Image 1 (cartoon, one colour):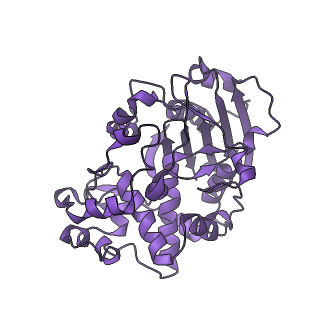
Image 2 (cartoon, one colour):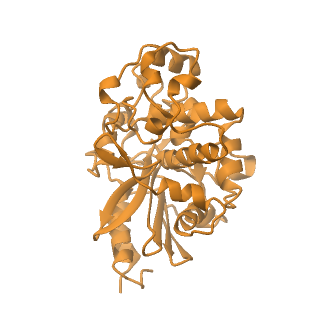
Image 3 (cartoon, one colour):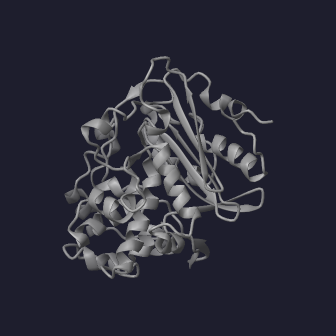
Amino acid sequence: MKDLKSFVSNYTKDKKHLHLVIGIIREGDTEYFSFCNNKKNSMIPPENRLFQICSITKVFTSILLLEMEQEKLLSSDDTVGKYMQNVKNDYLNKITLKNLATHTSGLPVIATNHVLSKNRSNPYSIYTEEDLTAFLSDANYSDSIGSFGYSNIGMGLLGNILCKVSGSKYDELLKKYITSPLMMNETAVMLDSEQNGRFLNGHASTGKRVPHWDLGIHEGAGGIKSSVSDLSLFVQANLNDDSPIASTLQKSHLPIWIGNSNRYFGWHEDKILDKSILWHNGGSSGFNSYLAWNKELSVGIVLLSNYSFFSNSLIDYYFSQLIKLITRKEPSQGTLIDSTGKKIFEAIISGEKSLK
């Protein structure tokens, strides 16, 4: 018999203000687990507490692209230049919306004119559409097109284009195409007053409370807030062929050969015990998240934490570590929740039924 505490003990240790919630999805059923080091009583059920899910947002943005493509509002093969007509740069006519969704556009992690040190506690809030236009006007990463390079600015640009094409705000797209069909009523970028009351404070790895990030034009790269119950519904939808948006989700599960490797719309691929999984994670200055699933076994997992894996004073350094994050290597300054999630998921895949 496996006790779930044994899997999370290294992660929960010495985190005074920690709220860690876990959703385990098996064959149509979902179980929720909560680990809280904060002794203050709360009337809010753990599964309904809201966290910033950070870069898991990128999966949703990629699915929005596929949904809008299905409605023939655009094509994933359209060039970025088609939708940035105020920017005269031939490089933008070489990269497509598909390149943005698969991190193969050559664009860097962040724009070169994005000076994070101007607002260390809320670094994305200061970056404007004018800044984006200025960056794109002379950007040229043609030599890297087709190669994988994780890009926040690329996914932020994609979200921005989807909003322009539709004439809608990101939250409106999210509700129309994903959260309303899947009854994910606790998932949004902008929260109402009731939801804000359930939105947890975020903490750096040192335990220091840090401000919530405002993503601005990067909202498609990391702006969504959600709960473990809603993200478990999302995992269920990816596992089931009868969800309201099943055809779009299934397209996101198909590998696309780009450059010299297989890529996915939004997802990353990994193997656990020789089983292929699709996954994504996320991190901000105060939150850490991980989501993964395997359709063959009809299992999945969601982990949400209100602790970051880095110190807020090292926020600039964080961005240089994103590639390490994608390659599954631990940053030196903290503990990624991913490793805990993988250990639990390995037990699930191996047939451990008695996790509790």
